[in-house]
Length: 75
Image 1 (tube, rainbow, N blue to C red):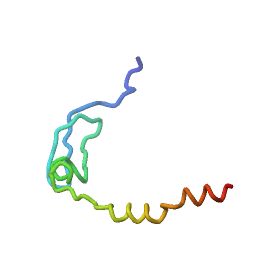
Image 2 (cartoon, rainbow, N blue to C red):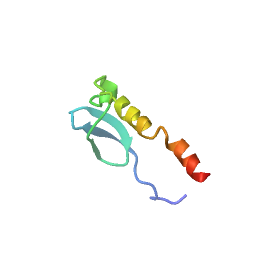
Image 3 (cartoon, rainbow, N blue to C red):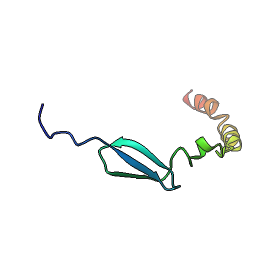
């Protein structure tokens, strides 16, 4: 194996914008992230569910006869 080919892997601190810090392994000296498991909506339970039922219903209504119309044009 070649010497000095791989960077040094070391323990470093990853800090989040919310103030949370984690000790992780990395080749970098310092890691800064915008979001972590402490502040991410999925992990905190503050997740917003987007109601797209109205959009889907409008789409289905708009294109309901599309297949029948396309088949009629082919004949």
